[in-house]
Length: 438
Image (cartoon, rainbow, N blue to C red; front, side, top):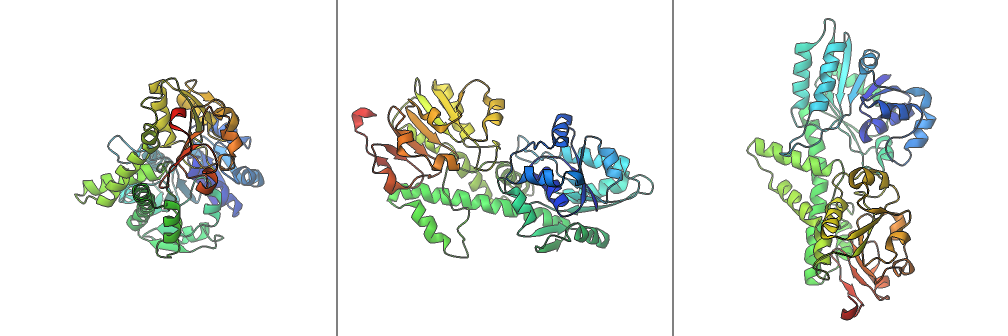
């Protein structure tokens, strides 16, 4: 089939490459001409495992262009994969979605299946369908389908090719048949529902995972007070198949392009209908507080970070991605800088994106050892393998080894062998430094 993907971010670019891998001819459309030029030359514009290889392998089946109107008319289906960032009030900003919809109404003069992959509030597909019906050109017929994505950044290619399920929200038999043809070579369960249910499945799924993270973080904070170890608690919980072991890793909060905005959007939507979801509201509040947890721990040792040299290891919201959106590190680093600290940062992938935000306010280090050298304090925000594999000899480069580990990277039995202060999440504090050294 001939498919058009509008938007070449995480969802759009990964979706396009995976469709090409399954044999479709794909045209990617983006208004960012600089990004399109890079893609034309085979240069990925995001970091995602397996993406460069599939782009190269399927180069002949993928076309990149900024001329959307030409691409729309030659396609069986148009997939809308543009961003839906949050507004100030927490609701979803749909301006990019509507820009595409208006272009389609003004361009298409035949049958067209419009597939909304962007995460949108429940009822959006119905509004799009109504608009297209009222503004379509003579000879055009639109079929609007909700087809939410469930990829995870860092494993997006695998998650798309080997999805747990494909959700298709369609009211029309023609649209259903077209979507069956699109996903014919995907040997995974297909769930056919109405568009409103598909839209809600996306929010309900993402927000449930966010709830699990906030829940285990609250349990972790209580573990520290009562002498329990969250690693053991989570392990014991995970054996229960009704709970499962995933998303039970305690830390300094979730970030990224999905959980923060999707929880806020669902909270806003529920309040709009006078049906507040108290659990979602609580998850948002817990996560915002959790991002400050390492700062609070460090304040026990230093009232101010003024004139301290701070090593920050990992800045992306999770390993396997260069995404910094709502990353917990971006809450703490400005506090260090405001206090007057010198901040040295190491991240194996996120440096370029961090430079766009903080520019020359911090020092960017090519190795974790460089960041740690002569540091007074170390803060860990991302559990990259390069960070988890560090040894005590690496931390011994610090003036004194004081570590605030927001991702529980190290085994306490190993840590307690060394002269360190080691604070993690939901576990016992290791303090083997004498008071006069702190």
